[in-house]
Image (cartoon, rainbow, N blue to C red):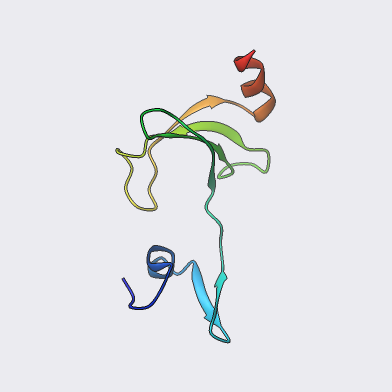
Length: 85
């Protein structure tokens, strides 16, 4: 952890640098949470493979920093929404 920073994990992974003293994000996470589950896990859009994300569950307690444990739920957001009906 770097003293005086709000983003220690991202800076440690070289995902945030400072330009003119302001943080600049170099890369966004590839799994974007869209909903929280009762167990503390998250439903996420996973952009790691294609531009159209798959829908996954991110198991928070089993995951390590920058190494998520995920399980696919649907091939795309449309398929996921149809599952909810």
